[in-house]
Image 1 (cartoon, rainbow, N blue to C red):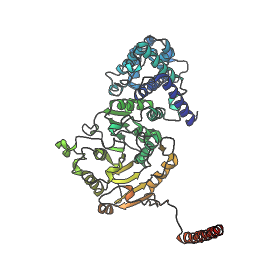
Image 2 (tube, rainbow, N blue to C red; image 1 turned 90 degrees about the vertical axis):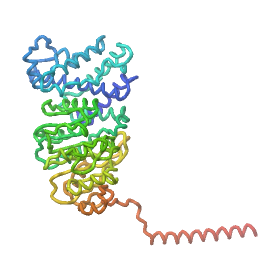
Image 3 (spheres, one colour; image 1 turned 45 degrees about the vertical axis):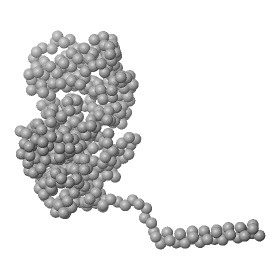
Image 4 (tube, rainbow, N blue to C red; image 1 turned 60 degrees about the vertical axis):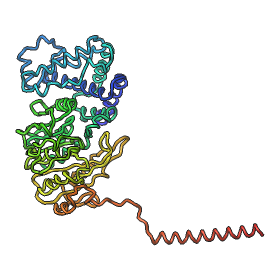
Length: 513
């Protein structure tokens, strides 16, 4: 199957499942059940494939649980991070789901057993709670056990029917595409109050390429506001595995999204020992202090989210914020995430961060932070993207690129606001758009209406304004009017009007005679 065929099949089947299942199930909850089931299918197939080891004579699903010895289980958990008995496999459960009167409790027990298999092993923190949002006993599925089982069976059957072949052979980012599709159709309003917007795959791709640009290897890659892990995974997708030496790191404050991020790692064949996604508040309880610095940082932090800021007097002494001499405003934590990323960035690395445009021109504390960034030559580029790229918001966001190894004292500004393809409900960045932006970013050459590099001293005299529109002249697309030609046309028109009036006067005089 081609990528477009796989995507169309995925969307068709999800829509079909929605029609059968949703009913009283809210779109956001429905998303959790579909993605949780996709994950259950994946780890089942992945685990069975591992046990079979390419031996076509072995069919793990048909084996009795009794043949599994403690040594087999121990070795498997040490390698894969978890264990699934043949009777617990997705295919086994899905096959008879419609006849299973205990389906909801059986699933709950299986999920608990899979998570529990990692207890006492190094993989425990990566496995624990993975199925927490897949509540098989929730009244959202129905008021009776029969109703719950009917909906769960429909989801299992729907996902089982998906012609996905081997997950590793898919031409599309299956999980990411399903997530994006479900977000756009059922959950566009989710997370808005917290300033959280899912990063579309095309934008994730651009950000990953910027962060990894011209780095032959990176020690590790980090996202301080990891979300579902899409930004981290784009780095894996577009670069050889060996280029990221020590794996993928991230922190996420939302428990549901944190679970999705960990699922997403497994779904992309990133083993538990190659990722470390943690739950917590990045600004107030940052992890990975002992793991920094990072050669590549990618992030789409929540826009203008509130934080404690100056109400906590100890924060001004935090090594992340102290160098700037001021904290991000309490009502707008955007620059707090930026300074956090800068602190975690290595001397050879690069950070690419999606930012709300307002932080680049507002005064007060945000101006002070811009002064710090420019005076210390940390800003490599500011890229203005097209509007309406993100689900749930139409604003035109920017990408702030930070670097600690610049060789000049200039900052590049790129106006990519006209580089997009318009689709039904949103705009997207095409491969050609991404390539053009990367060429501009790489060359640092001025390009009329698109890119310009400005001396930091000039930025300082311009009130440390980092808005792209302040430096890149917008193309005047208005029609050019030739005044000489216009005047000649007017003279002809006036002559015709005067002749017409004379003719009318003559006709009136003849009528009155």
